[in-house]
Amino acid sequence: MAEASVIVLITLMVFGAQYFHNKEIIFPEIAAIACGMLLVDKRSWHVSRIRLWLAIMICAVIGMGVVRYLPLPIIAQMSLGYVIAQLVMYVMQISFAPMISACVLPIMLQSRSVAYLLSAGIMTFLILLCDRLIHGKDEKLVFSNEFTKTNMQDLVLRSLLVAVMIMGAFMMNVKFMAAPPILVAFTEMTHRDHKVRQRFRELVVLSILCIGFACLSRYLLTDTYLTLAALLTIIVDLIVMGYLKFYFPPVAALSVLAMLIPYPAVKVYTFEALASIIIFFACALFFFRKEM
Image (cartoon, rainbow, N blue to C red; front, side, top):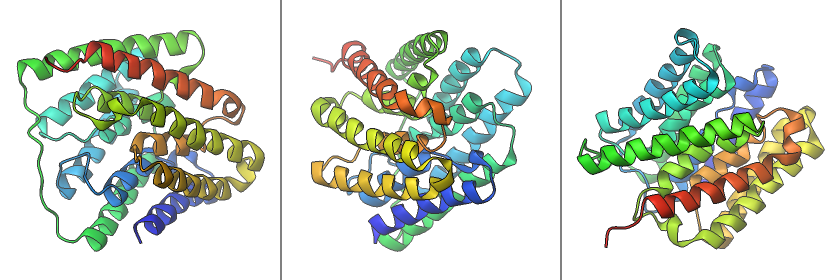
């Protein structure tokens, strides 16, 4: 039931975008949230459902507010959005990294459409509803993400590294190397006890197969059959993750992002995403070492 729910939700979202001719309805992080909430036995995010929904909506509103009311270069806007999203995580005392994408994505797209807010809110609600039906009563787990000296040092270091990456990506005209789901992945990687830090090979294989297939399906089926491309993509994602026994939600979001990016960018998106993942992985291991 969980796998079927993920497939239906993602396909429904992309179908809505295609039907209404509005790609801003596509919120790639929905794939990450769906996988993390519905498929992973041991939750990566310790947060109650209501806080999760509020986190997404608060960050989505902030992201659109940055676009509308802060006339800064997009590099500065995205960097600022990343910092603000992290601060919101600490204020809400949760470790729910996908909220970063909710804030940064509308900035990257320079979105001013209410369709993005509606999609983020409705789709997240539907995921939480499925989670309630599948897993039962909310356990109300809350991760104490406090304003400690170490946490603030990590926040500053993460923000500086992300700002450099965003600047480099835009200057070299490979902006999807700084795609919001990659920033989410990097944030997860900087958690010193996160399992992904010990599974680099599986991460590379997972990324190549999932993102590569997403780009191939989008390229061959074009926007005319976008919903079919998304359906095939999420099915392959679940098959690959199940076979590898490695569910890393940001990879699912990166796959769905292939349905949103401009069609010409599809040809190189897999290489950009993979290169960025490798760079950020190395930075996470080097700059956020485990304490001895």
